[in-house]
Length: 164
Image (cartoon, rainbow, N blue to C red; front, side):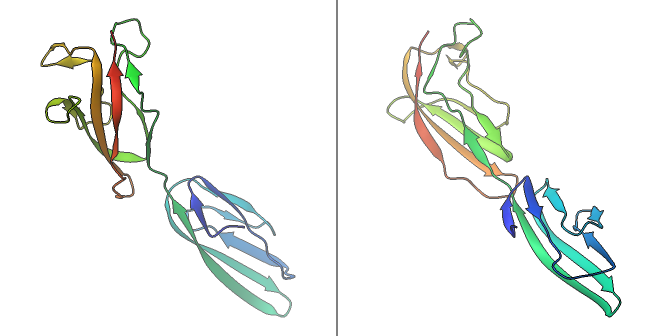
C-alpha cells in the first residue's frame, strides 16, 4: 500500500497469484505466511521485502524496497515563560522528536548579546543571566537542531517574553 513514509510506517501487502505456499520476509527480522499481511516498520531505514511463492507449476519470487523515514522536529516552543517557581512555565524549553543534537542561544532584543545557551538535549533556560535574574522583557532565540538521520533542520528563530 506504500513504498515510503514516516516511521512508524504500516504497509499492507498482497499476493495476487494462486499458490500452495508462500512466505514474506519483511527485511527487519520478521516474516509472515499470510496471503495479505500488514506489517509495521518501527525504525527508519530501507527494508527489502521479499515474497517467495510456490504452486504446482513452479515457484516465483518478488521483492520491493520500503523506505521508512524519520520525522525530526523541534516543537512546542513557548512565546512566554514565567520563572516564578509556581511549577507552570518556569523554564524556556521545548519538545523534540528524533533529534540527535541542538544548539540553543538566547539573545537580548537587539540580538547582540548572548544571554544564555545550551547544547544538551534536555537543556532549558531558567530566566537567569550570569546566575542573577534576567530582567523581564522580550528576548530572541535561535534553535539549531540535527536529526537522528543526520539531517540539519532549518534554524528556528523567534522571540520569547520573560515575565516574572
